[in-house]
Amino acid sequence: MTRPTGEQLLMRIFIGEGDRHDGRPLYEALVDLFRKKGVAGATVLRGVAGYGAHSVYHTDKLLRLSADLPLVVEVVDSKEKIDAVMPRDK
Image 1 (cartoon, rainbow, N blue to C red):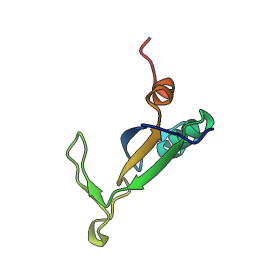
Image 2: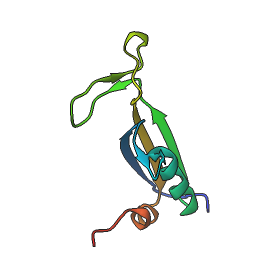
Image 3: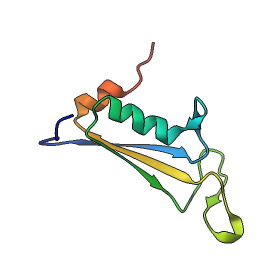
Image 4: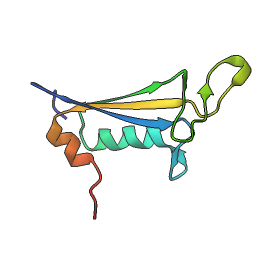
């Protein structure tokens, strides 16, 4: 992996804390994939509140503890490198 220089692209992936891939947290699988592919950087941010396609409100407030808080996976690298790790239609 080389240190990025010049203009970089930021990709954001919005998922839920409860999302899984092959039995493990999806955010872990994504970060591992990006690291193995040599992407310059990835960060997982945990939200304190949010809702998605089903409009179910998730929050970290004590009285309404949620097991599926929103997560954002941010990935930074060149457009070419990010395009190379994105899935393709068959």
